[in-house]
Length: 84
Picture 1 (cartoon, helix red, strand yellow):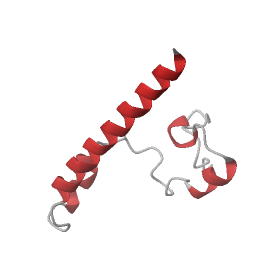
Picture 2 (picture 1 turned 90 degrees about the vertical axis):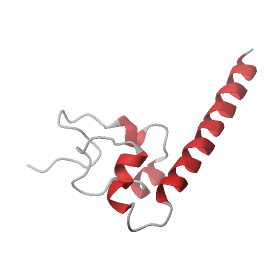
Picture 3 (picture 1 turned 120 degrees about the vertical axis):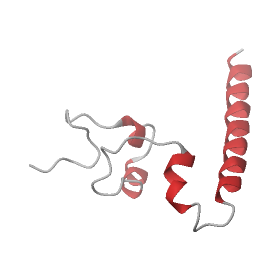
Picture 4 (picture 1 turned 90 degrees about the horizontal axis):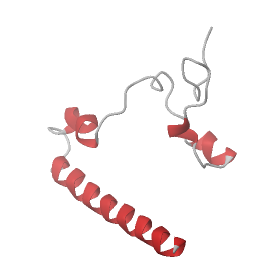
């Protein structure tokens, strides 16, 4: 029996894919078939095989992670201030 792409082996919805998304957006962001049970990897691990193909990939991933950390910090700070 084939399992739904948005559920895990217990039949529960995998929240890392569906949390807080509209139904229309969920349809657009469905994981690729057959990959829902793969473990989550760090960005560096996921890009490992592409390092020799994409110029300066590790530098790009480092910049992305720094920008993401800043966005998360600003978002969390704003939510904390609004909470007060």
